[in-house]
Length: 448
Ligand SMILES: Cc1ncc(COP(=O)(O)O)c(C=O)c1O
Image 1 (cartoon, rainbow, N blue to C red):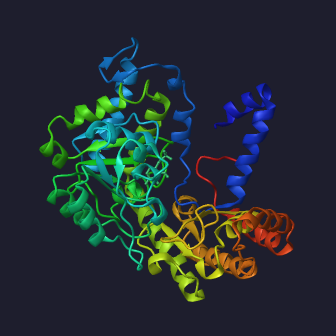
Image 2 (image 1 turned 90 degrees about the vertical axis):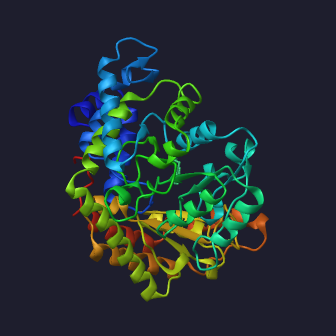
Image 3 (image 1 turned 60 degrees about the vertical axis):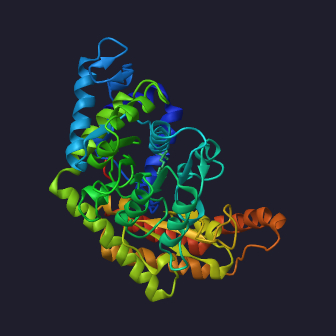
């Protein structure tokens, strides 16, 4: 929010203004460790808060169902052209409202209801939209999820078996909580062997790919989906891309994808977001972004090495990307307690399941940590090591608060734990140290 807008809002709607100020303070004073979050630049923010939100423009550039879209056509085409160049793909749709609708449109474009599909199991790090049982993607399609091996890597033997037995028409690669580089070529070998579509969901690692630190899926897959708001550092939105390989398999694929978005599953595009995506893509094409992407991974490796030194276990014993998944199973399901304790100390992370979690999805044995947001603030290895030390101290401080075995006692146990920790001097003291650290690292897009 720019200064002028915030003054107007303060006068007109002080109640909402106060809440935004509180959130601004939280974002500035705390350490944002959720790997799917980031801070957009002031330029991106200003386009999202612009008059572009006023316009209806169902359809696509130069093929609209509403008049007055000359300027919107220019803006959407700019976003498309920038994405095509940056990701080196043949066709891009920049209209998905977010990552989930983008993925759903892929199903709609490629499959008939009831067709078999395969994606990484949610509890192993996959996304809901890759066929998890409660998602529409498993209700309308037949889902055969693949899992990780005990070493925390994708079980390709299992995926080969699924491919031979169930012949999925669509295979997803890409994940939400997987700390290793995605081996696109291995997925392609399996998908190609049965003539399946292969779709890479690069929501988490899009920034690492365009920043040149991770391999691009473009030569291996038919379709690529992404969110625009994670490592790519754009507004909350999504994109679907079609590759050369995709067009070779089906020359109508670009039109099928576009139709699946509109009129298949969405209405008017969010033009203020499309504009923001165009700005973010321009930022991601700059040399500084390459440095940023490289630093994200350096930071996460620095954090992982500190955890390793301290004997804190991690799924797959480390990381190749922007995230770390702590394995707290030795403490009997500590994820929820640790997430809360970190919150008191102004560190935001999220509890997460680990593969074959012995606890439960709601009270899981893992904690997911990521470095994209902290790296956007200019933090480097030194800060990451310090943060890993603080987190280790907190784990040791709360590790005896074991989740009760009996399910019916868990809710009360967590409520009591929270009541106790809320005023805990050690955690509050740690929060003061965190605040001191964050003062030296301004948040992009936020002026004091
Ligand atoms: C791999 C992956 N795909 C898709 C999504 C869905 O994105 P959204 O929350 O924007 O719908 C996410 C979100 O976390 C994700 O991690």
